[in-house]
Length: 84
Length: 360
Image 1: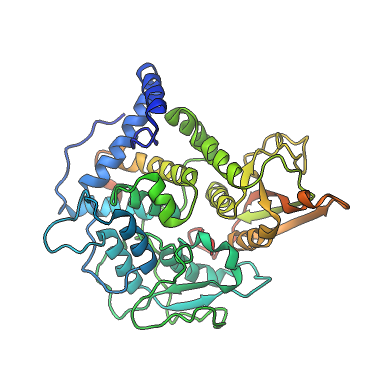
Image 2: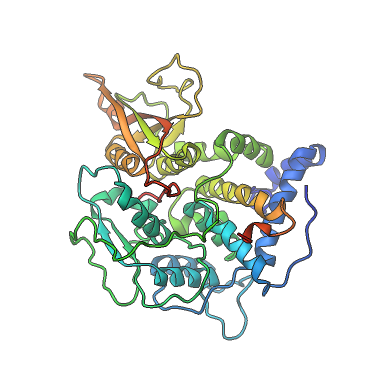
């Protein structure tokens, strides 16, 4: 389990690009749910109502999205993957 | 997962908390998932300058539920009420080409390789149309054209639940001809860019499903998958022995990604995934061993064609079997068992990343 790095400045282009690419790699349906949860702070029921799927589907999509991001955002201390 | 988000009832949350106290693995997983959320907030993605013509349906849906509530971010002076990632969506829409695409009413063929790349772009813009299953023949997929691109980096695009809210994306410059039968595909004048930046991982690639299911159970002390199935079961059908069974093989580029897409699609069609060998209605091959590549689902009978259409978009179909039990009671005719064997094969264009668009 990696230790949580101190928050990076929002303007750090490497960090932003890193997060963007991690998000871009998600399944679009999973990403949609993740965005509504993380950035809109909607509850699971609210997300379900907004996009018209069962709450259980919201749960599973959110879990998949975070698991997919887990390695990218937590397991790697430096955004070296953007330097391609 | 729901525990981490504070979305469990108090009793369940207490149970999960007690479990986490005694289970290092689950506690570590929960901590990791919390860190993912923290990092998404710490390294918030800034969108390029705002573009008009946001996905109206999604905007209205979200605005409705967050109206009057405090937003955890983006509430500063002068900031638009629509979140930055949606502005990013509009920006990407402005960076790609416009194709207005309407599926034919019946009998769509598998995607040709040259269609696949175009659909990859369509996916980035309109992939939230899962609720449109009842209008398979009327769907439009829309890709935006714009004269300019506002950012050097493609950004993730939140899909718009177009038909879920009953409207289509209304981007500037072109009215959407709802229900009109435009050509099957309008050729793009140039090769569209992939939705992710060069070097990024291909979309839809993630940990294999069995591992996810196991970790879901560990994290949620009850199981995301189980909860999902239970929810679908309540709203559809249970213990109904289907009179019709359909089996087929689908050759896809990426089996885990295809499997995830199918599981989502099954729920969207009002069905549910069932374990093949232990299937209460009897799988097509009940004596077959559990197969990670085999996916069985119960579907409402009137959604089978929509499911097959989705499968055609996903890969190349073969070995189609379709058996209907004669003289079955009407109740049993309302449900169909669809068993899909996913097989790895190269179905998209040479050198292209596998494309799994969200089903229309």
